[in-house]
Structure formats: structure tokens, C-alpha cells
Figure 1 (tube, rainbow, N blue to C red):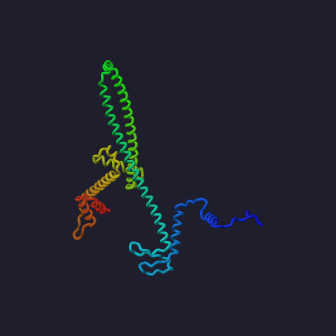
Figure 2 (cartoon, rainbow, N blue to C red):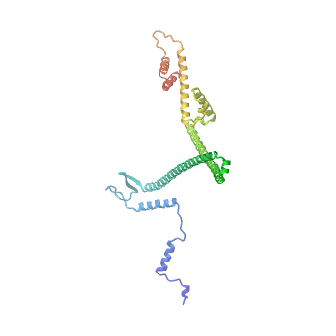
Length: 318
């Protein structure tokens, strides 16, 4: 007879459940990436669409063997293939994730801006308190300068000691107050310098975007020199010109300079035409039509002074 202990134990309800559980439950949890989860969802959707019975839209019959699916969007029937529907669902997941991340980023920026504003307000309140405290300390020290210390020592040695101790405390507190104010000012100056650099960098980028030729250092130097000379001739202070920071002011000044240059050329051309000798036209021969056109264009330019009339005048000479 075989040894019972060497035989496998009989399978009952409990041992069978445990055996099935060992196959159903993995020994270690497996973490899945977002891409893997997304792929599984899309695969399940495709399987569901493959197994689903086709339904009729608005009472219309649908071919059970057709791979297209009709859905209603905004009151209209849209026919999509199963692959297109799965892709649209996948794109919807990506769009939802992008929207979520964008909203989170915007919220983080908004929160950071609010914290920055609050920190600036707290620092300003602290600076105001330091200034009020400094004024009080200065007032107390000013009053103590009027004390006749020798007379006070003779009359009331105890009060003399109290006033000296008070003066020492006030002086120490005043020095500490001044040190903290200097630290706040240094921090404020550093932040302003950083902000100024960022502003100037942004303005430079905007200017180069509008004037790409100025990306060439040589052309930029020549253009700035010409603009500065023009503005000085217009009565602007040189220091004010050097302190121009807004790129829109530079563009506006340059546009005025180019306009004046164009008008000067137009006036010079007009004077040149007016000094030309009159051409004698023989009877029966018409005058030069191109010359008449030039004269009329220059006359119109002299009357209006408009840019478009100047352009027309220049075109008549070409």
C-alpha cells in the first residue's frame, strides 16, 4: 500500500479555490504606463465595436456587414469607420490630457503671480513699518540730545542711568532698522534690474521682428545713428533719445524719418522738373504725354504732400 503522505492531497472546494486564486492573482503588482492603458482602452473599444450589432439611425436600416458606423453629431448624421472612431476616441484622450495640463499650467502661473503680488505687498508693508519706527527712534534720540547730562547726573543719578540705557537701546535699534531697510532696497533694486533686463530683451526681440535688417550689426549701427541724428535735428534731447526703450517709439521715429526723406526727394525732383525749359510744340503735334503726367503728379504732390502722391510722382519718373 502506498504511503498516503507521498500522494498529492485530494482537491476539495478550499484547495481548488486557492489554486484558482494563485493563477488569477499575480505575485507582484505590475504598474502600467499611461500609453499602455490608452492602448488597452482603444483595443477594447475596437473589440466592442466589432462585436456590437449595427443599429439603425433615425429608423433607417443599417447593413450588418458594413464596417461604417453612423453617429449623430449636432443633429447631423456622420459616417465613420470603426478605425476612424477608435482614432477619434484616442485623439479625444490626448486632447483631454493636453487641456488638463494646459489648465494646470495656467492655474500654476496664476497662483505664482498671486504669491508674487502678495510677497511684494508684504515687503512694502514691512518697509513702511520700518520707516515709521525709524522716525520714532530719530525723534526720541533728538529729544535726548537736549538733555544736560552733567546736570542730570548731579540731580538724579538714577534717571541719568535710565536715560543713557534708553539712548543706547535706541541707537542700536536705529542701526538695525537702517540695516534692514538697506537689505530691502538692495533686494528691490536687484528685482528691478532683472525686470528691466527682461523688458529690454523683449523689446529688442520685437524690434528685430519688425526690422529684420537690423539683425546685421553693421546695418543696425548705421540705422540707429541715422535715426538719432534725425531726432536731434527735430529738437529731441540726446539723453532722452539714448533712454528710449519701447520698440514702438523707435519704429515711429524711423517711419517719420523715412517719410521726411521721401518728401525731400520729391521736392527736389519737383524743382528739377520746374527748371526744365519748356518744349516748343509745332502746330499739329501733341505734347509729350509722359511729361504732362509727371508735371501733374508733381503738382498734386505739392498740394497734398501725401505719401501715396509722392509714390505716384516717383513712379512717373521711372
